[in-house]
Amino acid sequence: MKYPLVSICIAFSLGILAGIFFKIGFLFLYLIAVTLFILSIIFIKQNLKFNIFILCIVFFLGAAVLKSSQAFPPCHISKFTQHKSEPVYLIGIIDSDPVYKDKYTSLVFKTEELQKGNTRKKTCGDVLVKIYNKDEFSYGDRLFLEGKLSRPFSFSKDFDYESYLKLRNIYSVLSVRARNTVKFLDKGIGNPIKSFAFRMKHRMSEVIIANLPTFSAGILSAIILGDRENLPLYVKDALVKSGSVHIIAISGLHVGIIAFIILAILKIIRIPVKFQYITAIILLILYCILTGARTPVIRATVMAVVLLFGYFLRRQVNIYNSLSIAALAIMAVNPQQVLDVSFQLSFLSVISIIWLSPKIKSLFSKELYRIKWLRFLILAFSVSTAAWLGLLPLIAYYFKIVAPVTILANMILIPIMSVIVASGFTLALTGILIPGLASIFAESCNFIILTLVKINSLLITLPGAYFKISGLSLAYVFIYYAFLMLIFNFAKIKKMI
Amino acid sequence: MLNLTKHEKYIITFLLFIALLGIGLRFYKNTSNQAILKSPIPQSLLERPAVINVNRASKEDLIALKGIGPKLASRIIEYRKENGNFSKKEDLKKVRGIGPAKFEDIKEYIKVE
Image 1 (cartoon, rainbow over the protein chains, first blue to last red):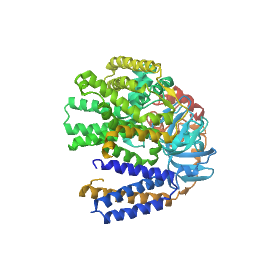
Image 2 (cartoon, chains in turn orange, cyan):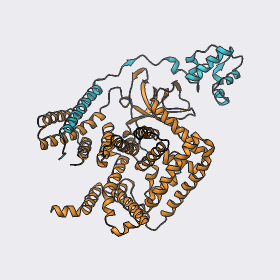
Image 3 (tube, rainbow over the protein chains, first blue to last red):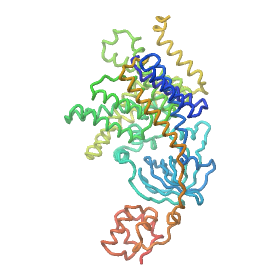
Image 4 (tube, helix red, strand yellow):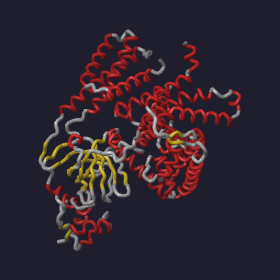
């Protein structure tokens, strides 16, 4: 098999799913994995048996990793958190870039000590803190907080807030009101690389806000910095309806464009080729941290790093193997990501494009490829249709919407979004290095953003652009994918029969 | 099935060994590590700040004031060393980092003696 990592990745993810749905203890899974490991060493020279044992080990390892991630140490803050809120004192370090909302600041707090009543304990684990005062907080601040600690609860039936936070390893929330005590014990004691990345993000954000109108600044911040706080809600809603909301989720296309810009700049300033790749890898990792290290950008960054490393080592890189490495890396750190809609959509979109787009392209006559603009149009149509076909049932299942206009929307909006990413980055970097020139880039950037919003709003007014559905059963999702594989592999299956 | 070369088999076997060992150790650590009980948090952190004399306050006393962090507390003490004691509360605004807004927040909790 050309893609050994794909089998390993599938076995690992199936193991995680088995661990989620079946109540089996960690020790049992671990002992089976160890037994299989011993057997694999015994049969290392017999290829078939060895391969089977390896895949079985990886399966049980996936389940064991999941069980291990669910076993919290006795110091974990979730063990001291009740469903009903209760007053506590917490000492810890800010472990995220604080988000300033209208009435409160939201941040992830890595706890160190807890006092409840007269009992003081050393603690570990993260808490989501909402602080209702106007102080300025930064990543790496050590704080003393007085507030009310509780388990998260969901306000609405449509959105499971508790599960959403669980996927981010957060099991407790702390509410700190204006009258409660907040004291700064120390500053700047976080990871220096993360600290640098967040400072860069703030600097770029300041440039964007200073040079663009509020409306465009909110959209550009979402597209290039992953900051959706100031994104107008109706713009997000319109993008959901046109099936193009992924353009404001930093993912493969954004990372690809940024990698291209970085390599182009490094080439112009005559950096040796190998150093170009290493520099690009470092900057992409910084960009991943800067944008909040969400699943789609981690996936894209890992794939880009593997690709660049392949170029550095002059080895051929296989896209399926690099996709599998990205998936394994994410699942090994947080196995429950398998259930995250963002994880599923991110990987499925890439798989759909890689697998389906060549098959759709092959449906067109070879004569059409002679004309350059037609060739480009067919490529755009194939990629857009492949992504739409691949994600259609999942989007219907999770968001209860079907948007046929997505194919046309992506063909038009993706190129415009690419120009926005490139010009937005140019604006941000120019604003930092040569502030006087920023306003020139700001004008063109603003124009392109407004054009994108206008075109999107026109697309959703087309007849049959989108329609909402009441819901879709998971069984239909599986049937759809089985049907899709049958249609696009029909010739192969016919040959086998 | 996986079509692995001899070296790839050894590498995968080694990686799986490390992964199994690591998971086992992590699970053992998670289930056996005990939270340590300490004495209660110092009273100075728990109490609301009393009125403090900025000419005699230590760094910890100054940190207890709302909006004053470790760096700003150090700057106040340095200003005191270089320029002598503050003669009135408003002199605090001469310290870099204490503007009108911050002064308003702390003026009820400070005195000058």
